[in-house]
Image (tube, rainbow, N blue to C red; front, top):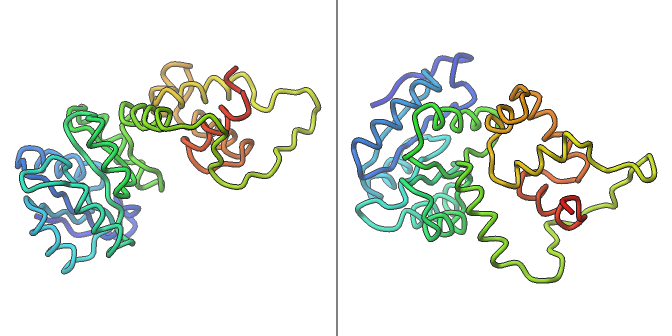
Length: 239
């Protein structure tokens, strides 16, 4: 069940194909249909078991794999670990019906780069999957909030260094590091909101929200939403 890739056409950013690993045929067919809409030229394949998935991953070239976390033949995290360890060029994206804390934690620990909730509507899933073409990570906002909650629950009193960070220079002494608009965007990011949800909330375009997010990352010397939230907390920007 595949579609040839049209060079330079829609889906070129997802070149290499996608494998959907899901025991429920209705879910796998739905994800195939959504992916075909998002990237019409993308090669698509479906595996109903982890054993079938491993065989297909060894025989074919895939760009990423969608892994059902609560499949019929065991732990989806095991397949994600296999991909992470033996096929590091393939990105593994977990998916489940709900944001179960144990499933989310095991997927992230195994090395998943994204997490989708199949209870979301088709439009929301399509929006999240388009992040792959932009080099982003498709993470449902509810899962993002769950991840931040897991981090907060395991945090220690002492500051947590995400990575060695240089001192942030602020040219105008006494001037806030982030503008009021950037701070508002960052607060919504911390709540797990997607760029589209933020755009609707503050009456901006998605492109403008992405522009603000890039400025926030640059000013805080970070590379991701999670690091931005952690760094903002360390600097007391939310106080």
